[in-house]
Length: 77
Image 1 (spheres, rainbow, N blue to C red):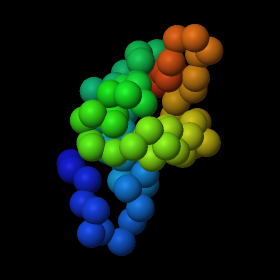
Image 2 (cartoon, one colour):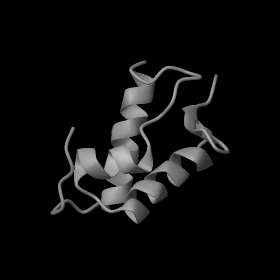
Image 3 (cartoon, helix red, strand yellow):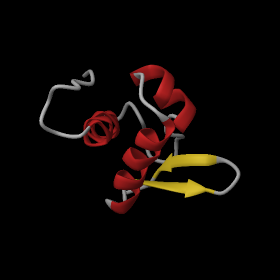
């Protein structure tokens, strides 16, 4: 899945959808780290604020959580 800047959904929503799919497929397993903000910016050509907003969306859905000083992780089910 790639980012479509012409699509009607904001870029951060698209990035969240990509990560959501990776979690659902098991590619990002429970308890495992999620790509960092820096990695997301490099992979998708987005800015840090957009990457951080996408992660916050998934945090709000309970799919990921932050461990201070360590990063974002997939929440165990």
